[in-house]
Length: 253
Ligand code: ADP
Image (tube, rainbow, N blue to C red; front, side, top):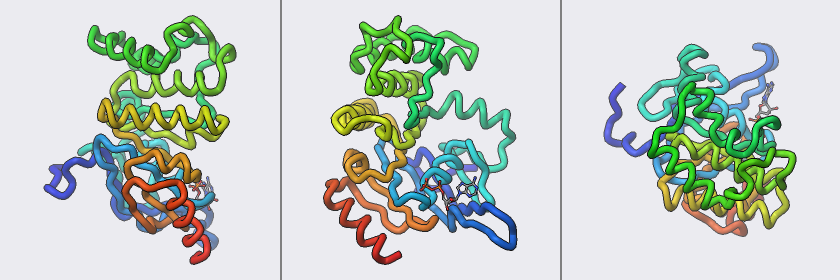
C-alpha cells in the first residue's frame, strides 16, 4: 500500500482499531475505535489510568496481539492479518522492546544479552553494527560489566542492558512498557533520560506505555487513553500539567 502525504513520517499507525474480550453477551471493550500515528524520530508516551487500554494498544501495534477490527501498520507494512511466522520475523528485525521486568536471559552475560537479537536472527553484527553496539555500551556505562550476568547487576544496570539490546539493531520503533516500574525514582529518571537521549541524539522512534506523569514528562508527545479511546494528544508537558490532565479525566469519567 502506498502512503499518502498525511501519513508520511509515521513509523507506526492504527486505524479504527477495536479490541474486545469476553463473550458476545458480555463483551469487555479494551480499545474502542482508536486511530493514531506514531511519528518517526519522536519519543511518544501513551498514558492513561489502569485498564484504559494502553497495553492492549501497544501489543497490537507491536504484533504481539491481534485486533478485533481495524488495521495496524508498521511503516508501510500492514501487520493486521500477517501470519505469526511473518510477525515473528518483523518483530525481530524492526522492533525493539524494553519491559518493566527487564526480561534479560539469566544464563547469558551482558554482551550475550545485548547481542541476542542478532543471535535470534541467525547472524552476526556487521562491522558498522558492531561499532554502533560498542558506542551504546559505552554511552550506557556498561563497558566494565560485559562479563556479568543479570543477577550480578542492579535494576538500573539491567534496564540499561535491555535498552542497549533494544537499540542495537537500530529498530524502526522501540516499545517501552512501564520501563521504570521496577526502579527507584532516581534510577527511573536516569533510564528515562537515556530513552529521551536515544530519540533526541540518534533519532530513535520510541513508544512508551506508562501511567506515571513523571515518566510521560520525558516524552516529546503524550497520547492520553481513557476507557479504550484516545482522549487527548499533547506536545511535551511538565509532570504537573500531565497530573492535572489525568485528574480532570478521572473526574469526567
Ligand atoms: P492498561 O494497560 O491501560 O492497564 P489494558 O490494555 O491492560 O489496560 O486493559 C484494557 C481493558 O481490557 C481492561 O478492562 C482489562 O481488564 C481488559 N483486558 C485486557 N486483557 C484482557 C484479557 N486477556 N482478557 C479479558 N480482558 C482483558
